Image (cartoon, rainbow, N blue to C red; front, side):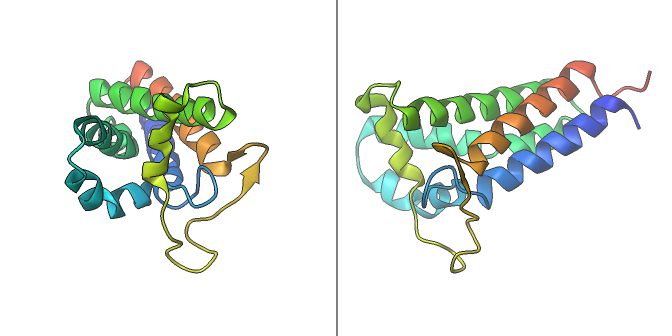
Length: 152
């Protein structure tokens, strides 16, 4: 198995776990977007619907990276989505982005699924563990996508 495949597998698994089971901020995690999806589409606001669709693709970034085992292009696209989502979270939480742009992090707020277990809520500084892991998974996926699935 080539090194690119290993990087894609690791990056995809880390990005998927970070998206769906580890929080970005208190009560903010990727699965909450899927839970709130019907409400967001029923809001009638075009910008909210567009951002919901973009974030839905971004939450599937780990899956795109895993598919990148066979296709370099999907690994790179998924990695870019994962890195962009992590950077968006970091800039929004730290207050760098204006409130009009960073208000969309509220789409990811939802109830705990299993007590205090899911989402796993570990804050490391101002960001949750999921924010760091989604960027790390995206970087691993980008490296794997650039290297490609072929053996050397």
